[in-house]
Image (tube, rainbow, N blue to C red; front, side, top):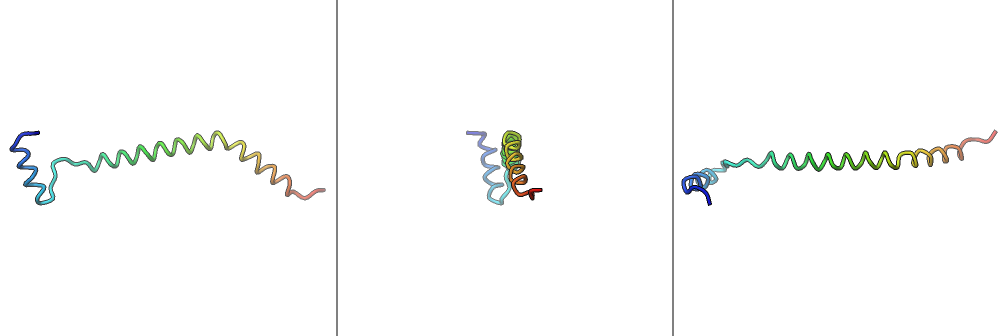
Length: 68
């Protein structure tokens, strides 16, 4: 455990909704990291699959074009 005086002070402050340890920033950083990883994964998928999707759309476009 910690210093008994510090524990008593934290208990007293917590009674009134005041905390000495702020963990809100930690949660925010975790969400930012998750969002960054999802973004990187999405970009990688687009780079890998993008040309294949483009060729499929081109095939459909060519099939729908009126014949001369």
